[in-house]
Image: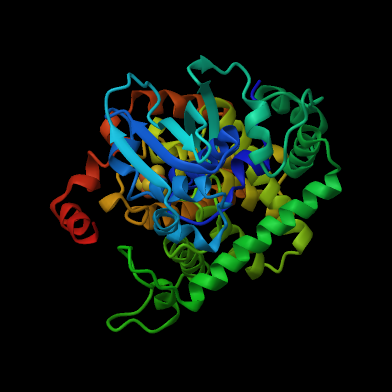
Length: 452
Ligand code: SF4
């Protein structure tokens, strides 16, 4: 059983930057290196295998920025993160990047050499496994069997050593839901409090703070953002005005959801603070749909918080099977996962029980299988904005269909299994390598040349 946590792995990290599996994970790898070295770093060399994602994306998707920030001791919410490479140059920390064949099998493998000011030197190998989560595989040439002593202190809710869990996985929760009923948030609260060894009250408090950060990201985006190194400029405000030509199709709630999703994506691409949900690339579908629907139907803070946790529980099931790395299974692991989480959250928000929330997640995920990852110009903006919008709309449809009594046919556990099978079969060029799909169109190449 993988003890995946809602706050450690699904609704978080709270971060700045384009990508959780690149920027946020890199901050953590930099911080980890700094701690392992136990010295002020003066030299760092990062080696990436040419077969992986990092070889082509380490600059555009913010790994270089994150690694420099982590080595300097910055957290991933630090306002100075965007200047981390400049700062490291100013203080004499030399960082080199090398692409060479290392025989790495994981697409997000970091081979690291660090030297400190007093002459200390270490090597280590770390992986980014999606949504900002990292693992330590080797230290100074030796395999690390259990990395929890190194990794847990980097997490917002350090897990208990041997937690007594209320259920182990989606199969056990399925039979419990059949016997006891209840809402999915009841199970999410029991899961997360057992894993972290804290009260359910504390879990609710943490979830409120996550929801508040999500609301702030919408407000910040709607207020207008600016950032030079991005493809898309401010657009979220366009849906509230009158179009220069034609009229908007009457779909008030849908249009306001699109607006909220776009606002969060604009905050993300201008280095504002966002909650990866479950990743930075897919950070807008869940909050954009949940918070906008909640406002429309006047739901309380308690109801919103519980719905968010219900969405988080779906993320736990997905992460137990496959994780959230587009490098491993394409955008179905990011925006697809976000859509399933949002469908469950919306269903719970509208009074649906645990079985209904899981069925809505199943329906939304069924519609997301096979989504490739092909970002334009290495920026997590195009087609990521559209995919977040699609994920939010899909979630709304799935929730309403289940609440109305539609049949989802395939159970959630089987859909998650199919998602993994599709991910494994997906061609390398469609897994966040910028080597296929929209990434290699003429226009994408032109944009890339212009931005780099
Ligand atoms: S296409 Fe999807 S998975 Fe790829 S970067 Fe964009 S949001 Fe992330």
